[in-house]
Length: 250
Image 1: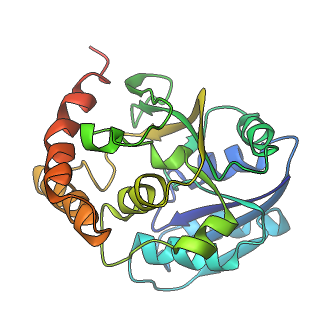
Image 2: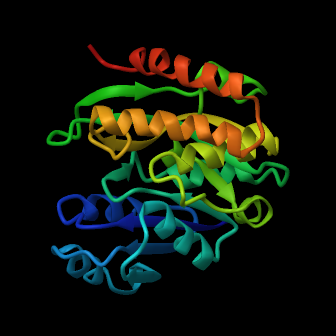
């Protein structure tokens, strides 16, 4: 199966190699690897150029934020299935894409997602939070649930039918997209109970109290933008923190 994997980077010199290496190590699939860099000013671009043609498409230019850059990558994607891996994340092992491809052999499946481990920024062998998902059923978003976006693989045709990321949302456009395709459009999804991605702590949505508040407001706005129930959206936002607390390693 032909996969397009998109990595978006900006001044990611300290982490970019682990992300790229984890993608290029994937076995058993045909890979179209796309890196969209936001005109980094550190050594990120030099590190990326060192991979040569192993990165199929490398673009480094100013953008209008992370989701704008992701949309650029989606526009360039040639694969049947698209995955997005952030520059400070990495795949948990070399068989992630092959496991996902096996599920997509069922031509009726639109989306596949799995589990994610948050890891210590300095010691990535130390898991600080374990995000374990579940099969989707209608209404579960209202209970504060949603998939971990870095594990969310989508057929390119889903983007073609239902649109890309709403880049007016600066922190929670990934949540809005998943709400749109799962809860509103009812695309067929499959949960793969496997840790797919290791994510370093300190991402844009949880690096400060103000970021957390903004992310929750944008998640609430996602319900309104999709014409879904406002009270359901409020319920989702109120229940999200309790779900997160259960994930932390004490």
